[in-house]
Image (tube, rainbow, N blue to C red; front, side):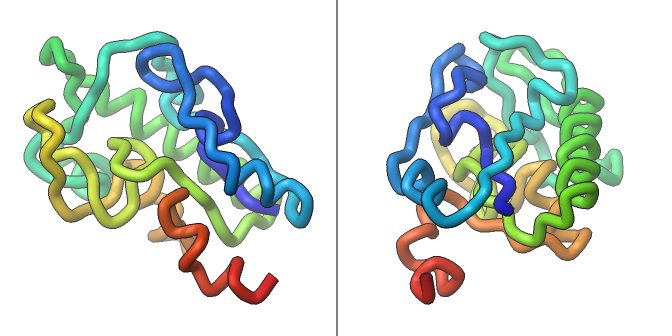
Length: 156
């Protein structure tokens, strides 16, 4: 079983009400059971919603209360992002999932690089809140951009 950002499966849960359908991930359904999750919705955010980015840090800093997830209008939604991350972790642990494929660059799901908090499209190194909580609990996280190069999928 694989945990997957729901937007990558074509579920309209992206901040703008759309999705990030990815045919490579859909193809994985022939070999794996995919569990769709949207941490932002699980945390109580509406769809559609204003875009959000992590200000002054990354996912770990948000989890520790040292940085904030801020909507484009300046509203702090760190609590929703933390709650959503915790709910995704519960799902992963309940189902003994050890790999998650999450949406690249997202303040929730991004792994390795996330948007820098300026809403300018610039990136910074770091993980989103959900990616960080999963990684810190021993769950491997990759983005949809890594599927074709991941050793996990080259062997199958």
